[in-house]
Amino acid sequence: MPKLKATVWSTLSVALGLLSILPSFRVFPRSGLGWAQLVATENPGLAMASGGIGILGGLRARSRRAVALGALGLALGVRPLIRRKAVNQAMSDAMREGLGIGWQRQIPTEAHRRFGQSHRTDLWGPILYLLRIRVRETRDVLFAAPDGHPLRVDIYEPEQREGLLPAVVVVHGGAWFHGDKSDYAFGLHDRWLAAQGYVVFDVQYRTSGGWPSPLADVKCAVRWVKRNAARYGVDPARVALMGRSAGGHLALMAAYTANDERFPAGCGTDALNGVDESVCAVVVSYAPADLMLWPAERGSAIAELMGGLPGEIPERYREASPINHVRPGLPPTLIIHGQRDRLVPPVHSEQLFNHLRAAGVRSVLLRIPWGRHGVDSLIVGVTGPMIQYDVDRFLAWAFHQPAASPNDAEVGDETAARHGA
Image (cartoon, rainbow, N blue to C red; front, side):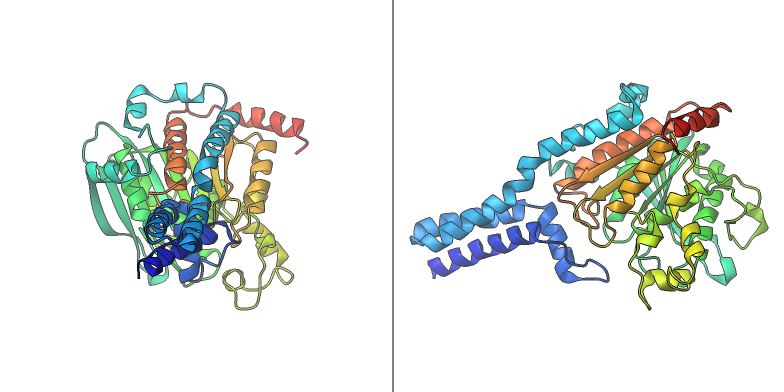
């Protein structure tokens, strides 16, 4: 029996280790194996702990098989921890390259004090931080009812506040037809951001309609936040958009087509007419940037959203692709993508980043070598704290940039010309 127990633990360790290195399984629609793989990848301690138990049990039971399997599982689990330092450095270099040398000096000292200083190495720091913070939550506030479809928002506010605060509008993922506000563990991310001194609005959009209904709803949410800025103590000049997966696509489109008459907000009320839709920053994770790259099939989410296949309505796909709306003067953009994402391949973010740089837009691309779709969904693990570290600082930097001057667009045009855009 001791040999069997040791072998079981060791085998579990190898299974978890293999899950963390195998090609990605589907995480959508809801795939238990895909989510198990994401957890195994982001929490290598599971493979290491079970491997350690298997090794100890194997030594006591004199089982070479258990010891060997446990050692293999432990080795597989420790791989991302060994690589983490190099990836951290690459992320720091990307932030410096995208935002300029000394960019952190533009962040006020009081904002720096709110940052968790050990995000990159302490896996348990986020849990302790979330247990310690005090955030006021208001659920299911109605902000619009386009075509009679009620849309609601969850609002997260810091309990201690002074003056007008920046706002972050969060757009959930789910392949445009699934998901909801504060879904999965993302409500924890909202609480985290609120503790950084922001008012967070996690919004719904219509998941039952075709394009461009979801985009119109996100734009309506931005307008509603600005219209109700005084009610929630928000500075309407400092609003950022954040989205993941399909929500990232909608956040990019809303930011890049702000106040564009071709893409009107659909709020179902005249009260929000004429409200400025522009934002000062956008943060996206594994977002589809070029819908022409999506492997569309009959009955697929993208085909249902667009109302046909790319070959049938190519112009509609191009107009719905953020990459085709890149131009000088867009808000600073932080892009996050796992290099092992099969649902939304990294080429989406790579091409978007290249277009933004060519247009002279302040932008950063954080590449996670072992990251899969949903790489930032777990705030506790290898990658979550690493990403949060830079998201916190990017938003603080963006919210404290001086107001854009009329000459900014000219500077962007000159930069684009130098890059041959």
